[in-house]
Amino acid sequence: MSNPTTKTLHGSPCLAPGALALLLLAACVSSDPRHPNKVRDAAAYNVQLGIAYLNQGELAIAKDKLDRALAESPESADVHSARAMLFQRMGDAPKADAEFRTALRLAPHDPEVVNNYAVYLCQNGRINDGVRHFEEAAHNALYRTPEAAYTNAGVCLRAAKRDEEARADFGRALQIRPSFAEAAFQLTDLEFQHGELAPARAAIEAFVGRYNATADLLLLAVRVARAQGDRAGAQHYARRLQLDFPGSDQVRALAELDRNPG
Image 1 (cartoon, rainbow, N blue to C red):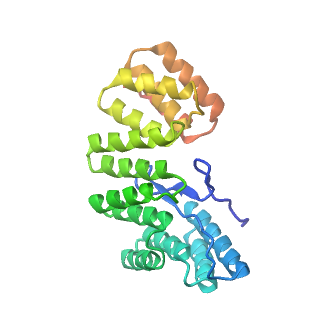
Image 2: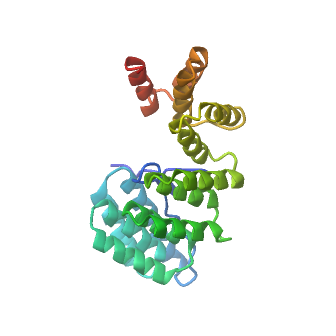
């Protein structure tokens, strides 16, 4: 099997979708001056491969890569953070928790590690602790993508039915980066779920007129337009979805929506 590439999200090749709704996992590998470059680079490479295989569901291969990374750099917070995500996916909560605690001991203020731990907390129902850690990551001046942490917090809060708090966090994410499609989708979807069709439609039109729309956002645009009774608008967004993202899950969902319009 050929080596996979890591998934890319908003400019960082180290970010990938996680398991809680659309929550984002960050697992970037930072430079650590305590380790020789050659060893550090080998560990970083194996971490990235491990995460890529993890994203593809190849858990055995991911574990092999992350075991190698641990042997190469046992004092790397990035390695332990990635291994925590692996054990979490494997359903081994005690090992995941232990790996996260080791990562936080090694790098207590690393925003990537803090963000990863916050994902873990939210996925295990510790909403308040998770949101607090997301906010800690977002407030860290060294964190390259605070908008992702705020969006994560919002998704976490939505899962707990705390929609107004989630709305505020999605708004914070968009204040930092107006082009961040994931936050735009989450906020617009929240509005749609609450029956706020006019604000949802206005937000969609403003976003797609200025930035690159995702498949999720275009599918949502179809649903909003249909809910408004705007058949022409729905067809416009459906065509754009089919042209821009042929063969995607969202196009298949569109076909299902056509079969079951109610």
